[in-house]
Image 1 (cartoon, one colour):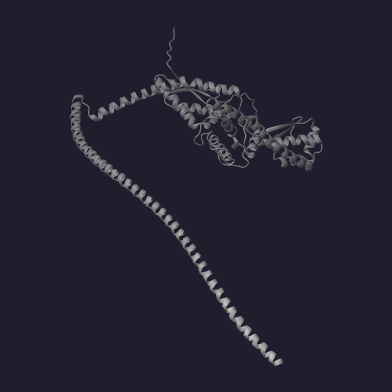
Image 2 (image 1 turned 180 degrees about the vertical axis):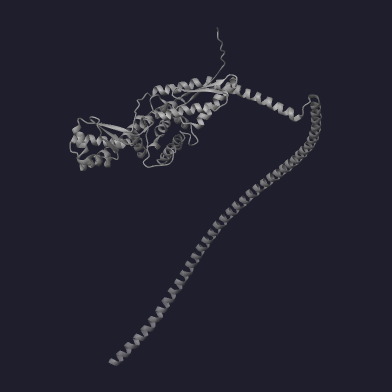
Length: 512
């Protein structure tokens, strides 16, 4: 029973499995057909969409290509038009060139014909000149060369007289037009800049209360005075002069350091080598600060801004320098003010002129030895510290050692001379003064026809006496110009020298 049941169950399971499998296959086959049909429909839809998209892209590309083709055609058309226009213009130019070439050929031919005609006429003229020359020689009894020499000599004499007269007329005209105005400007400038004069020399005198202080300064066996001389670089002269010690040195800065150091040492009372070195070091620092302060104050007083600190220090050092006995800083201030006034009168920039006037002698206070003239060295310093080219040129050219390229240069030169030429501004050695006067007289005496010469007005005027029978008035005018030119080229002098040529006839008779 159990076996039968098991067999029946197995058969039933096999039959059920078979039926289930058949049903499943049938159902699966139906679903498969449905899925295939759905997939086919979907594929068809996708295909149509893709076809539409492709058509759309095709149409877009087509329209873009058509636009590009149109643009290319337009550019080609424009290029063709330009080429046609260029071709037309080239043809016109070619025609013009052909026409000009033809005109030039005609002109050349015409010139050639005129040359031939002129050559023929020239030959005819030469023949006529020779004939006329022969006739003149026969009539005058002189050869052509002799007549030419006589004519040249007469023309030379006449030209000299005419030139002298013309020069005189030009000078008179210039004096009428310019002398009055020039005098006005110079006088106004000098009057507006009235300053004091400082006279420097090579010694300073330190006054003391009694000779006991003098002994303390000297020290035991002269140790104090030797230490002071070594620290300051000066020479101290202690002699029998009561209540005075002489400080000698060519450098005024060193003399001032020594004087101030002595003043502090005497006031303090402690005078020994260590204390001397300490005080001298402090005074040097004090002088350095005073130099900078002096430079700043000078620049502020003159209204000059933007100077390099090193230039300010150099300006401050001018206080302790002198030129021909004239304090260099005072001279620079005078020149700066004179330049500003003169530039204003002439319609130029007064600030630039004042700046150039202040800096024109900075080459006289070098920190190091230099072989250049002070004007060129000063211009080099100014250029180093970024001063403008016109300022540098005015500094370099104020002694004619460089060509003047700006209007500031002659103003600085003139104002420098005015400041130095002011009576009492400068002192000269007597020997040099006498030599300058002798040189002036010797230059005038070197010219023929000069009988006597006199240098007067401290060498600022030269009187020249000429023989009345040796030259006329026009020649005397020419002589004064020649002497002035020679003095200007061969001599160095402050200010200007007036040359007066005197020609007179004296008739002397005695009543007995």
